[in-house]
Length: 260
Image 1 (cartoon, rainbow, N blue to C red):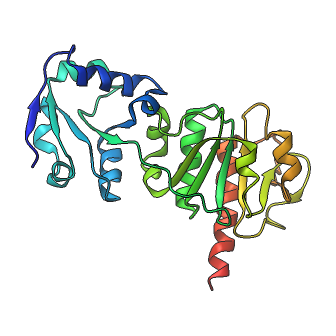
Image 2 (tube, rainbow, N blue to C red):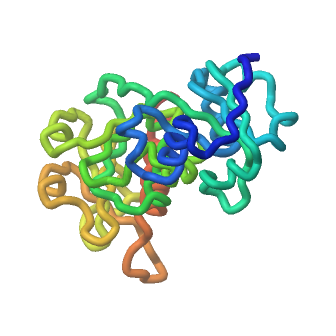
């Protein structure tokens, strides 16, 4: 187990940085690190072989920490419970978390299946789509400029560990997406083929757009496939995260069938 450092002052530079990571959605970019609060996220990172920069524990949580987490950490910090509550973003603080170096982006695989997020604003939607991508076998997600930060605390919590199964790319422009050789597929509530009758080929690049404005017109024009999701009850549209789950499941079915 790594040596344990005890920090009790809220003015400590490490605590100040941790508070920013936990409460500022963009701090991970300036610090080059992300904050994983709660046992589920820490376990997901360690389970994927990630080294932890720092394992952070509230005093009351110390006896319950798995040995594997301590062994995966370069440093272990213990803080009083009262200090933990000052930077925790959870209504019921878990008392444990970890600082992880911001993962370096891998090389983009232009012909592989992917998800393109076009200016999605809601952290819950973004995290939910990451979970669906990981669950249905898509391993890279491309976020256009204007999309909620993929490594922000709220997106991390909504992603429930999916981040560590994905290659993530942020701040992209139309010129980056235009390099993809996998065909682009978009959803529409009133035009295109019905998804269950004619799903896009596998692999493809699914594009999911802004919650209010939809997909950028330039991306719409370059999409080779437009699909509709059948809605017998006649609702105007689906939440983007729900639509993404349906589309990615359809692609997963094709992917499995292609291997048989």
